[in-house]
Image 1 (cartoon, rainbow, N blue to C red):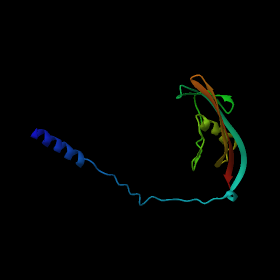
Image 2: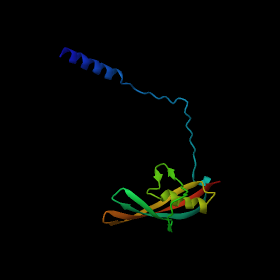
Image 3: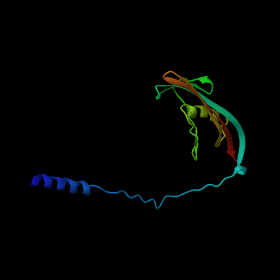
Image 4: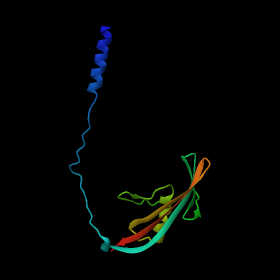
Length: 140
């Protein structure tokens, strides 16, 4: 019994001695702030992007259409618009946003104006259609 208590005390001390903390110091990290307003941008136009996909059993997703055209898996181009929490939601919207690059190749600033989602619920699945309107700007 005494050996059991010594062994437990040893395991407890070993466990407590292995606990540690990690301190991270970023004293040399540079913070950059860019102040802009709408006078610094030139409006290029507005475009609508869309995608349609099926969901089976709640987690299996199959992309059907991107911007009204049948989706063919293979080489895809994606545009990830992520600005202060404004993010295109849903599978396939990054691929649909690549249309903006082809329509407005000089576009540098993208503003999501409206985002809409329609879901048709079926037995053990659903069909979801998403569309978004995006305004495109370039810098002066």
